[in-house]
Amino acid sequence: MADQTTCFLILRFLALLLMSSLSTDAKILNITTDQFALLALKAHISYDPYHILTTNWSSSTSVCNWVGVTCGSRHHRVTALNLSNNGLVGTIPPHIGNLSFLVNLSISNNNFHGSLPNELSHLYRLELLHFRHNEFSGEIPSSLFNSTSSLQQIVLQDNQLWGSIPSSIFKMSTLKLISLAENKFSGPMPSIFFNMSSLQHIDLSNNTRSGTLPPEVGNLTMLIQLYLANNHFEGSLPPSLFKCKQLQYLSLWSNNFKGKLSPEIGNLTKLTFLSLPYNNCEGAIPSEIGNLHNLENFDLGINNFVGTIPLDIFNISTLQYFGLFGNHLLDTLPSVNQLEGSIPISFGGLVSLEVLDLVGNNLSREIPKSLEVLRYLKYLNVSYNKLRGEIPTKGLFVNFPAESFMSNDALCGVIRLNVPPCKEASLGPKKRLNIMIDVAAALEYLHLGYSTPIVYCDLKPSVVLLDGDKVGHVADFGIAKLLSDGISLTQTMTMATIGYMAPEYGYEGIVSTRGDVYSYGILLMETFTKKKPIADMFTGEMNLKRLVNESFSLSILEVIDANLLSNENDYVAMETCLSATMGLALHCCADFPKQRIDIKNVLVRLNKIKLKYLHDHGGR
Ligand SMILES: *[C@@H]1O[C@H](CO)[C@@H](O)[C@H](O)[C@H]1NC(C)=O
Ligand SMILES: *[C@@H]1O[C@H](CO)[C@@H](O)[C@H](O)[C@H]1NC(C)=O
Ligand SMILES: *[C@@H]1O[C@H](CO)[C@@H](O)[C@H](O)[C@H]1NC(C)=O
Ligand SMILES: *[C@@H]1O[C@H](CO)[C@@H](O)[C@H](O)[C@H]1NC(C)=O
Ligand SMILES: *[C@@H]1O[C@H](CO)[C@@H](O)[C@H](O)[C@H]1NC(C)=O
Ligand SMILES: *[C@@H]1O[C@H](CO)[C@@H](O)[C@H](O)[C@H]1NC(C)=O
Ligand SMILES: *[C@@H]1O[C@H](CO)[C@@H](O)[C@H](O)[C@H]1NC(C)=O
Ligand SMILES: *[C@@H]1O[C@H](CO)[C@@H](O)[C@H](O)[C@H]1NC(C)=O
Ligand SMILES: *[C@@H]1O[C@H](CO)[C@@H](O)[C@H](O)[C@H]1NC(C)=O
Ligand SMILES: *[C@@H]1O[C@H](CO)[C@@H](O)[C@H](O)[C@H]1NC(C)=O
Ligand SMILES: *[C@@H]1O[C@H](CO)[C@@H](O)[C@H](O)[C@H]1NC(C)=O
Ligand SMILES: *[C@@H]1O[C@H](CO)[C@@H](O)[C@H](O)[C@H]1NC(C)=O
Image (cartoon, rainbow, N blue to C red):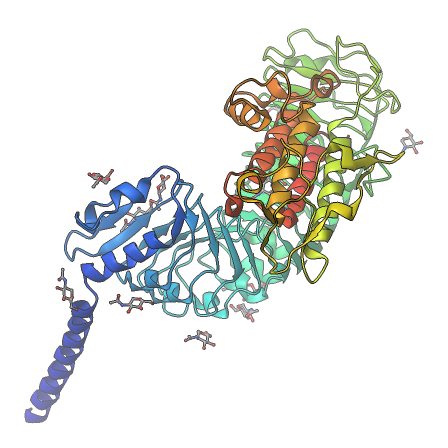
């Protein structure tokens, strides 16, 4: 009895000791520490376009009243910091690790750069880390997950990160969402990653990840979204994937997946989105797809599927997008769908269908009259098949703008109804993209291909030469400049052309690789608008960059070269492509050099824009 009491007292003593040491901790780190950390963060912000922090984060008011800051009601420590969508440029100082009560940290949609500080790993209460769309580079700190025991969401999407995933993450049993999309991660994902059974949302899109999808993926029984698009994944889909019964989004397009699509796909009855284009899958389309009664988007384009379209698919009343397009561009795309046979007689079940894309297959016989029942159809493309008859238009396309394509003639291009066929084509968007990709590649070689960067200085249309195949080359490196310190070099006088030269060059004479990117951006605008940066049409303060910037919020199509539009039959794909291209051009032409994207990423993005355009546009 006495022993028990002693034991109890000792335990109590130890507990008190522990508590007092914790409260000592709390004394050392208090709201003053938080203020100090946030002021350090403010000091590391070099540009605050909306003056969010400059005016608001003042030492004269309590931290807890600062914009973007939330404090706990009990302990008065900072629990959430949300600086998303503020266009901030800067770096994250190590002091961030002192915000020891932080639960939510969101700085998405800014221009934070530099590396992720190791001190993030001190935030052991962290649940949400949202760093989407910034310019962070380097590797994920290896200790980042060592003490974070409650992390639920980590979003590093759209940065410049690379390297491996710290192994301590694999032990975390709280993680529900991870997005590493749009970075530079490469190599296989460790199999053990797919053993993290708490995961519900995985987005690894737009990296260069390779390797196979391991059987462990079947352990992810709570998985709702799996995005692996635009990587180098290979091999066949493991049968265990079809055990992930909660899956709603499965996006695997543009990889090297091969093999047959298992009939067990029909087990994933919650699927609403199934996207597999640009892979090497083969065999028949399993009729079990018909079991997917929630499917809205179904896309198997550009694969090696053969056989007929299973009739069961025509009963999916939720289906909005139905893409089985192949492609006629055999020289650039390796394979073409060959779905022989006829279009099924009855479309009655596809009551929600908005897009039907069957381009480039081997469909024959009459076009069925029953197409007329597709009341919501906005886009129909059955070109490059062997169909006969006419597209029935009665009742079809009640929505505007509606488009329908049908042509069996590969030479003539796609015929848009009511538009004269075979108009003389000027340089199309793809050619223009290709030219600008070539120019960016030449610049990348100059900027990064040598031990010291070389700056071009005077990029303008007259130095871009087109050869007989309309391939772009950058001429005359005589005006290029070597950069001694790799960043900038002050020149007294160098050649440059007004309209194309970066603002800092004009008033400070600073030559830099960022200046080339500016000129490149202007050139990109000119290529797609056919307008000179300083033309007679521009009066006063107006210039090409401003015009593009202003039209960007309305419709980009208003400033675009009319020749591009007159030959266009897919305005949606075109507008998406042009908006992305002009957005990239504006990013190149940011006023402050540090805000500009570097040429390597220009090249990456432009290639992605092209891929997306080709994809949206059925490869033309
Ligand atoms: C925070 O702690 C420091 C000592 O570590 C002390 O000087 C300061 O007054 C404390 N601030 C508040 C607001 O409690
Ligand atoms: C800072 O912003 C918050 C939230 O918008 C506002 O309540 C507060 O008054 C502002 N403080 C200052 C000093 O501007
Ligand atoms: C963190 O963010 C989540 C999601 O927005 C929210 O539900 C939660 O209340 C936030 N926590 C704090 C401490 O602000
Ligand atoms: C952060 O603020 C943005 C609005 O700027 C909001 O959309 C987002 O949900 C917030 N994030 C969290 C985690 O609360
Ligand atoms: C906070 O963090 C920084 C850098 O990690 C450090 O220099 C500083 O002493 C820390 N402590 C306090 C109380 O601010
Ligand atoms: C973090 O954890 C990993 C493995 O879990 C370990 O190798 C590493 O030493 C840890 N780092 C620190 C700073 O504790
Ligand atoms: C995944 O977990 C299973 C057991 O749950 C185990 O057999 C397997 O080895 C694990 N895979 C890896 C790569 O750790
Ligand atoms: C997860 O899947 C792997 C591979 O299929 C298997 O070895 C393991 O037993 C499964 N674990 C659980 C918990 O289901
Ligand atoms: C798919 O469903 C069938 C029938 O219910 C079942 O036999 C099969 O094991 C399931 N497959 C997977 C991978 O769960
Ligand atoms: C489609 O549904 C209709 C009515 O629900 C049914 O009669 C028909 O057999 C179904 N067709 C297929 C191919 O499943
Ligand atoms: C298309 O089908 C015809 C028979 O209908 C066949 O002769 C031809 O080889 C097929 N074309 C391709 C490209 O599969
Ligand atoms: C990946 O890139 C495509 C275009 O190439 C884009 O549409 C998509 O939004 C990107 N996905 C992510 C998650 O960044």
